[in-house]
Length: 507
Ligand SMILES: [Ca+2]
Figure 1 (cartoon, rainbow, N blue to C red):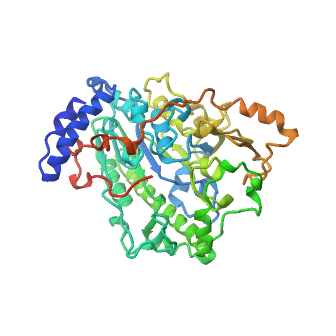
Figure 2: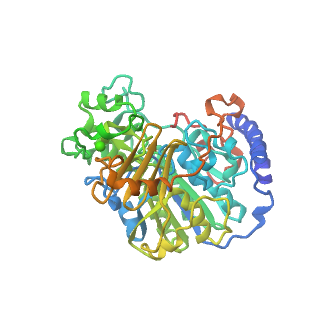
Figure 3: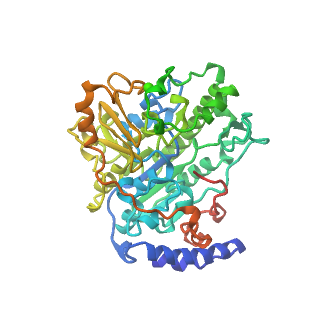
């Protein structure tokens, strides 16, 4: 941290000066906020490297999870063949900030009180040692890029160096889909080459790092942004998915009739999509973005494989939550159903013995923190809510009794076991039997024959979930916003022009 503050003041360019001053202030505030000991980096790490790749808003439409029969993800498929894929992995909250906060701090939303995108997680958890900080404390070189924490709430104190997105390309004349006042709920091919797009530039940055020797083991977080909206990626990816041949996700007439009202969000997106004849085009757009994301993942993995760290690097691939494309007339995330709560979670490399296997145990994104600490020989942090997956990485069918919990708030929460999903809302309940009903079409919550199952599932929900009052990001004074913007002076070895504030609002 002391190193950070020195370098943060040593900027040169005009913009650099501005960022340098802000950076110095931020570094000071970060030091105040962050309990990481300044001398702890003297510790020598000897564990394997970690390549920690995330894909924003990616649901289960990848080859190994089989969520959509037409998805094309050859690189992710290859990764599945060299590691373990968790087929029942779930987010702890179905939106970016609370999900990422939970993963990065190892704490449930019901512990932290961080349930919403606008909740300022660092104010809620001033003493939390984040996953990257835990690695930093134990001698790792810790770098990040793209979207790791929720965009506006990234923090300097968790990274030694960061690749910041500059701004994303948009097609001329957007919005393209013809939906009035659609904002970023839009889809289109771009005339640009992949190398000009932000995610591919991020991949190139990671590729360069992976091709070099480093004096310490590293923890490298690479956070791809698409398929987050808007769905603008190079046209070649759209060309693979002609809308006329695209299959829609399975739906059932009357499906929502047996659901508590508060479980559903607005039908506005779905009404717009159907009215403007965009359903197949939207599904094609999402598949195109997944295909683009897969290509970027492939670039990074190829660089790892051809570089000096190929044999000593744990690979993790994860997504922060799922995404709905018209199931139950819903779009986006923010719901407690399978398509919104199920995530991508795959591990490969040293410590992952069950090569090419799948595990159907119910696991959670917040298990990644204790798992990576375990695999790398770092001390356990007793405050964490998750559990190391190590046993499942050797035997995917090993005994396991932990269900997966997903929360939208203290009173909107869902538990998933291998067979059941039970959700509690302020105005009712849902119970689905996944053995018989993979699309969660028939709510069994009011069936007397399932009363016992329901009671035992309800017991698995968090007790006394946090109702702490959160500081909201929009209420932060201007000087504290981007409290976490990474100061330019911290970056090493890379083009400083990368390190400018985000221009697109991230949600
Ligand atoms: Ca239903």
